[in-house]
Image (spheres, rainbow, N blue to C red):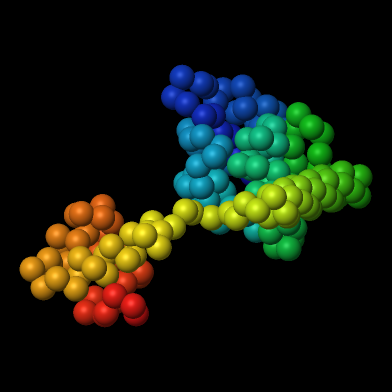
Length: 188
């Protein structure tokens, strides 16, 4: 059984074009969403995926109607394949129920994996280059050594409350506790 899935991003867009193409392709049932492709929650897609049975084929008008990203698209199609469900994209003429369609989809998967590896390599190279120049990543420390010493001095005076010290140093109670143990001596 051919099951269709159609999606548009906004209320201003229309599903008719996709519906017509899916009906002409022989889809007996069509699920739909009006939601951005970036949204993780798409009830129509969830329903379609739940409805599909072994031997069925999920049909979309275009690849970008199904996946939020190439990675997501590959995950969905791989999951379908593991369940014995085919996938077909009308515009790109991809049909994973045929050997040629499977090959094309595996090439997409390999390209996506290659892209992820290149991004990872570039990121690591950039981090290593920054470290070599003395830069460290991450969030800056909320309290430098000078502030820590000031906090200890302020806390050693019993007339200062924890809240007073936090206000003076402009830090939260949690941050203060992270750097200074209250009731500790100045040299601790």
